[in-house]
Image 1 (cartoon, chains in turn blue, green):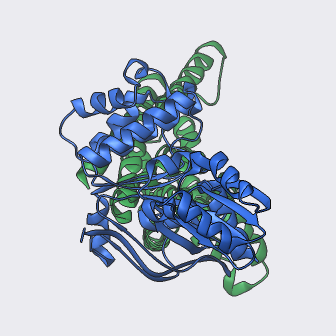
Image 2: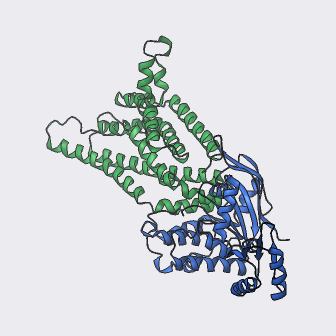
Image 3: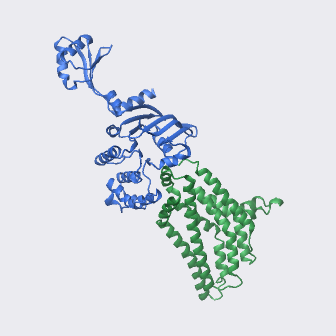
Length: 305
Length: 248
């Protein structure tokens, strides 16, 4: 089993008397791209700030790379955080800003600044002041900072916020590459769930400061994959006909007259024909499936109900 | 700590405001000397063209000097505290952040004060009449001011790093280092045992130092040092305690 990079145990955070994070048990293993999904105010940024040491927990414990307590400061040197909007000196150029952090982090290689600027396509804009950067450029500079110290784990809060489609694509490709080639563990949050669906290997769903769902990409695909749902007057006869006509068919019969067929999605016309030609009445027939966004919204709805 | 210190130095040296404020301070010291010098030359029997008057104007600017120190503290704190959050998330201890910022901004402030005093002496001694005021008297008066200014600088720095709003911060400094003596004097004027209490408050100590200099009776003032050190250490201890436990 892979090493656990991030582990929280009953982690809680209260502001005055309001609990923003409640008894959170959560872990991220080495090599994962874990997507943290939640509405605004779900507690994602607070969790990130707790991980980064900017906030102190009200209760519970936190482990990073197996370290806890005072050792967390050492463990954090192997991580990079980009939380909310990137913070830089407005009157400094991109290069000066990264140079400031390079000195701070004790990175001896001066060329590292140039390298990370190239990675995020800002090398030709390095002399421009941060205050004159567009939102997308600021985000990319934030990513450059996150990569500056060659971390083993990246924690990214809304890293593609403000980027155009091309920029988003580039960041996705970059993060995948970092994960696959450099084995960097990534914990990421974004409101662009379609993007997370393409990127993450695991999804953790948060609502009202608690985890309401946690599943791998494979489990997710299993749960939300497309299927043909049909409501029919005689489901048992339909089942016999389907088995005879399509021997490798995967289906389930439900007591309320519904049959759901998991494969042969492209044969919906033939299935319709097979059943109606054998005298069965189809009341409803539709191809259904959900994406990450729909799955999340359903989950939140159930949780809030 | 050394890496963090270096990075803060990198930031401080590239701060335009540092140079602008330093330039304004040195300009004011120079301009005052030249105004007195030329007035003395052009106005017959001009009464203020002597070192005592020139120096006493600087000695009376205690709160002004503290406010310049407050701005020096702001260069490395203020809005930049979000950037300090980045350092903390990289595992840099909060104590390192606190002390590096304090030491560096204090060093900058001390350097400016030292240059200003040197300039003041060079201009005063070369351009103006001396009367009975000696450089020794001035230096003793500055030594008496030093702990109070340090306390003011420290309090401003601590309030800044703890993200107290700049307006409240300024008001606190003005009240404690500009008005506390007068306020206490008004409050306890009619209570015989506490009548002299105002003399031990920062602004009271600064005022007394100025009066003693003008009267040419200035001598080393140990209460100023005790109160200044007490305030400085108190602010630093409390400030560090709060900062190391504060959500950023």
